[in-house]
Image 1 (spheres, rainbow, N blue to C red):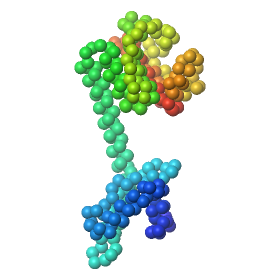
Image 2: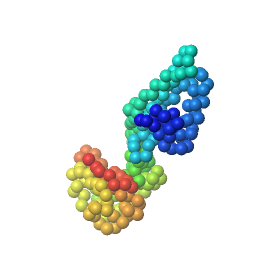
Image 3: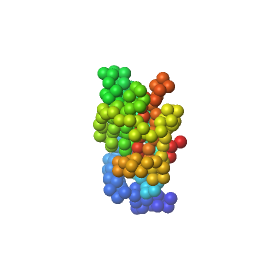
Length: 231
């Protein structure tokens, strides 16, 4: 607080980053010296400090008539900025979901086209390291379509392979239950699967069953490059 009261120490105390400190200092001093009240407003200025949450302030200078003095008003607008950022993220996610819906509803009807359109947007929606959609053959014994997105690069494969070769026991998925690993290093499953995921840079994953009319028709697999808890 004492540093904030000292004009010589104020800038160093508030703005830790040297480059941004010089930028905002030059801007504020130039605006203040102009004498133009319209320029004496600095909104949504980020305050970044090591190890702390970024805060945002808006500041306004009001000249005192007949005096060289000014009244400075500073407001903490962090909550508003965070709320706006959250609303923006939600709007972006809703738009992505709408795009997936449109792909399903207006697509040509081929499973590979629908799966490919959906998986291309999942990376943007959930910021995954790897995402894939597997569509099963109608008899529920074979895997026919696999759409994979790795870091924003999508590919669709049409192939046939036995589900048990990839998933083993399907009872968990058929019951509509998800499988997950907060950290695959501590997950017990076949070594070749663990090696494959680690080779892809996946640290945690979530496997979601896709069902229609009570039947298991596929899976959605999501992987991240950091450990995370799934509630």
